[in-house]
Image (cartoon, rainbow over all chains, first blue to last red; front, side, top):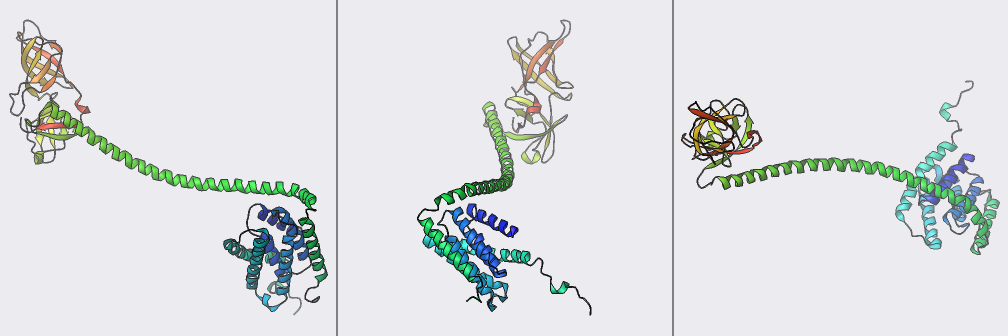
Length: 149
Length: 263
């Protein structure tokens, strides 16, 4: 959990200081798609508040977006749509576009399709890196020890 | 719904809390806690931003250095080309100046002067023109109105000049100065010395007198400057006296000289 928090903290500051992409949202979508649990809700709420502070927007605005994204990703994960990893791409596009539109409407920031494309492309490395991390202790079938005959 | 989302209660609580925070923040009630948080976050953001800027500057320096290297290489090539071009132009300018200078001294109407380049100097002076350009043995080679030598050997594209310092060179000359006029034979000595010999005692020759060609040899015109008297030698009881003659300039310095094709 410490690593998870550190990574999210780093991503929050990175997007707050340098990058125009919502890395925290990407991370939360990917994590909710890979693993369920109420900690995702806490992360969405907490880091939503932090991102709001860092970006100087109204407190809770990003928390709402992140919570909605986490819940949707969790619900899609339970359906047969999530059987293949490629399903994360349309889900991410929808949420990133929705976030951009909301930011455009409520915070007045202009919609940039180039950034949206780059953010969508960033979903895949995030997905594979996080999956590798989350499944690091899961024993693969092919290397499971055979006991007896 | 509960089966689909087991943490519904938590979700609803968080959403409610979020709306509550939004409401209070819109009324500016949360400015103090926000400021407190920002006292921590702003330095971190600033540090991150400065680090990234510094890193970007470092990378930019690498790219700029690489670009500068290529530009420098291109400029060096360009400079080399310009220097070569400049050198060619200077050479042509010098040739033109030499030509104009030469025509001011010896009129091209009277003399058929062929400009030639000096391509070597040993015992003889080598020129880059030969019989193909009408150069013949015995023709005089001059620079301005100074005698340089006489064509000794000719090949189609080059020729050799017998210099006046050569021991084989014997030219009828006369001196002209305050003491009058004296006739003699200018003979080459080993090295870069000339000796005016067979000068009658009664004829006046003094140090500083200029020596001119007599023009009695086949293709050599009269009045070319041969040099200047540096010393007069001779005793009263001898029939002839002698004078040491120094050329007016160093032949080695010459780049372009002229062959007189019709003296």
